[in-house]
Length: 304
Picture 1 (cartoon, helix red, strand yellow):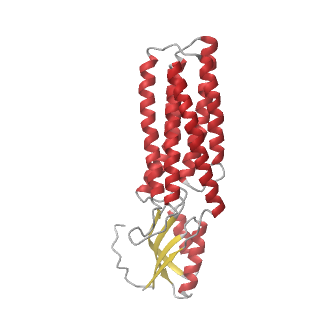
Picture 2 (spheres, helix red, strand yellow):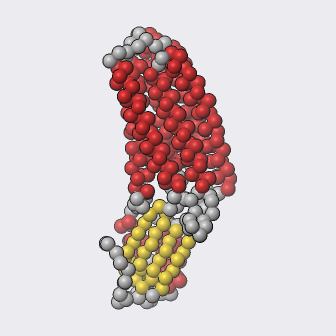
Picture 3 (cartoon, one colour):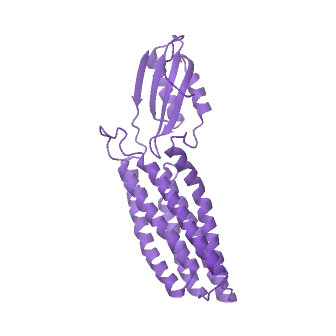
């Protein structure tokens, strides 16, 4: 029986990309902190639930950006004897925490909005519109910072989706302010708060689902076990494959272990090289294989 452990430390981000993401996180955090303070102040001053709820959401996004930056830096810490994968798993835990923070924000916004819906209060529509207009610019600019890297990392995608959703929410608040300014329909203010909560909920759901899936070592979204098995089984020299396990080491790195039965017609090293090459096309770069000969008894204990 041959045990082969291949640890392909493929760097998903080059150094320039890492520095670019680091600057993007810092710029996004700084920009949003300034805006959150201004929006909270305006919300309290004008007693606007729409502004306060939007500011609360933006504050949760600041926290999310800080956590994502922390995870981004922890992921680069080298492995040691106690943490043999390093701290890469922290990126998954942070994405889960971010989703939970957003859900808490949704609950708070909905409760306050429903309370004020029965007793609408007078708010200045023009002031709401001006502050929301600034919010559109701030949120859109922050979202653009993560546009290029959003498909590479779950945390970066989360940051992009949150800021893009914030930009759309700010557009809604802007429209609400204009409606209040010209119609005096103050009930629009808590209605906007409810709309904000619903938008946050929908934008967060996929992030929550995928984060829980990765936390439980589920197969990452976008990787199909049947296709992976077919790719391995189709490699020259492979008779069959079993005991496949696929999971995420971090939000950017996926791993696989598998037992591969050889047909004896090709060198083991050639088979391993071909399988590793095929797995890279499946977005799996950390591959551990156990090679077996035909008729060999597999002694691995499994619940499969």
